[in-house]
Image 1 (cartoon, helix red, strand yellow):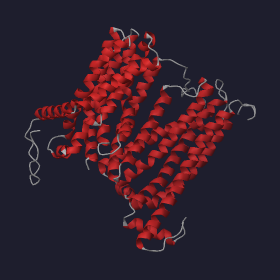
Image 2 (cartoon, each protein chain N blue to C red):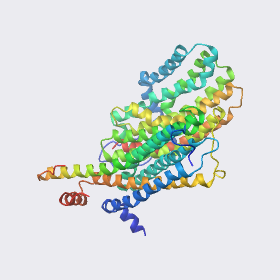
Image 3 (cartoon, each protein chain N blue to C red):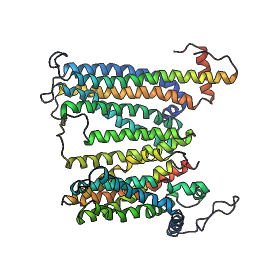
Image 4 (cartoon, rainbow over the protein chains, first blue to last red):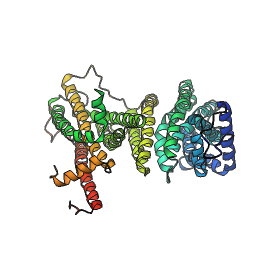
Length: 240
Length: 251
Length: 59
C-alpha cells in the first residue's frame, strides 16, 4: 500500500490516490499475501474435490444417479468450499494490525473491502470455477449442462464470497468463529445455491436456463452494490 | 409530539412505563386468545375437505406471522439503534430474538402436525416449511453472534448488522424457495384463498392474529424492562429503583 | 361444530399437539419474561447490596 500513516502524530493523511489506483493497490497486495499463504488457499480447492469424491463412494457410482445429483452436489461443494475459506479474508490483516490502519485511511472502507473480497475470490473461487467442469465430467454431466454449471458458478461464487465477507467481518475478532460463521452466512447464501443448482438442472433437462442465470446476475449486482457498506460497518464493529 | 417519543426512548421512563403497559397488553391478549381458540375449535364449522384438521390454522398462521413480524421488528430495532445510537433500541432487538425463535419453532411444529393429515407426511421440503426453518437458523445465528461477543456494544452493533442482512434476504429466500419448489410439484398445497374462506372460519383467525400481536408486545415490554435494568445497572436511576424495590415489597 | 365427540374424532391427537405446543410457547414466554424479570431484579439487587457491604437480602 503506498499510503500509510507514517507517524501517530500525523493528522489524517490527505486522499491523494485515485479510487481505481487504490483498488488496484489493495487488490495487488492481497493477491500477494494470499499467494504467499497458498497452502491455506488451496485448502478450499482440495475440500471441493474431496466432497465431490465422497458422494459417488457413499451413494452410488451409477451414471444416472450421479448425473441427477450433480447440479446440487457440485453447488453444495462450492458453497462449503467458500465457507471454509472465509476466515482467510481478514485473519492476516487482523493479526498484524493492518486492519486498523485500513480503518484510518481517508478512503471509503467499503471500496477497500470490495478489492479484498475480489482478491479472495480470485484465490479461492476461481479454482472452484475451473475445477468444476472437470469434476462434473466425472459425474457424467453432458456438455450443455457443463457450460451452464460453470457459468452459474462464475456468477454465483463471487456473490458467495461477498456475502461471506459480511460474516467474516462480523466474526473477525472472535476466537472460535468458524461454525458460527457458517451458521450466520449459510442462510444468506441459500438463494445463490438454489438458483445455481436450478439453472444447471434446467440445462440438464434440456430446458431454458436463462431465468435463474439472470437472477444470479442480479443477485451479484445487488451484492456488489450493497455488501461493501455492510461489511465496512461490520469491520468497524469488529475492530473495536 | 416528538418529546413523547424521545422520553420513551429514555431507559428510566421506558422502565416505569413498561410494567403497566405490559399488563394492559397481556390481559386483553390472553382474553382474545381464549375467544379465538373457542371460536376456532368449537364455533367454526369443519372444513369439507380437511375436516377438523384445518383448525390447526388458528395456531399455525398466527405463530408463523409472529415469527416473521418479530424478525422484522428485530431488524428495525437494530437499525434504529445502529443509526441513531439509541440504546433502548438495541435492548428491544435483543429481547425480540428468543420470542421470535420460540414462535418460529411453534410454527414449524404446528405446520408439521398439520402436514400429516393434509399431505400424509410430517415434513415436506415445501416453500413455506423450508423458509420457516431457515428463519429459525437466522434467529439462532443472531443469538449465537450476540453471545459470542464479550463487549455488549460490539454485540449490539454486530447483531444489528446481521439482522439487517437477514431481513433483506428473507424475501429473496422465500421467492427462490417458492420458485424452486414449484417446478418440483410434489403434493398439492391446499391454500385457503382469502375471498373464498367463510366468515365463520375467518373471524377466529383474525382474532388470534390480533391476540398474538398484543401478546408479543406485552411480553416484549416485560423482557425489555429486565434487559434495560441489567444494562443500566451502573446508572443512578437503576440503582434507585433497585434500592427502592428492596425496601418495598416486591410486586 | 367439531365433528363427533373428542373420543371419535380422528384429528384430536393432531389438534392436541398443535394447540398444546403453541400453548406451551405462549405460557413459556410469559413465565420466562415475568420470572426472568424478577430474577434479574433480585440478582442485581443482591449485586448492589454485596458491593455496598450491606446485608444481602436472601431470595
